[in-house]
Amino acid sequence: MQTIETIKLLSMFLGANGLWKVIEYLLKIKVEKRKHDEQINNLKAQTSNLMLENWIEWSTRLENRVKELESRLSEMGQEIESKNLQLHEKDIQIEKLESQLEICEANNQTLTNKLSQYE
Image (tube, one colour):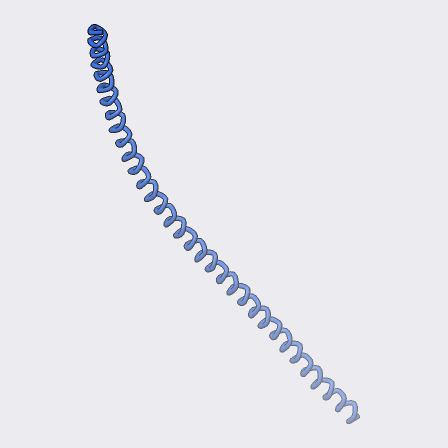
């Protein structure tokens, strides 16, 4: 009888110990899952942060490029305006020279006519 009681006592001890091991295993799985979820959340946060930093860097570069191009456009506009003014001045010079040429041609014709009268 004592053997049966010892066996019962031993099986109760092993059963309680086994139940404790199962509870311990379930808690360990839960902790590992929570740790894994936290790592995933951390990686997501880092990814979001990197994406935001990249977007800020890209937009800053784009703004700088736009400013640079606007500056170059302004410079080119001023250069075009200067060239147009020079062209206009050259057109005025050409008109004056053409006018002088017409006067010279008229004088030349007059002189040619006078010379032909003396011949």
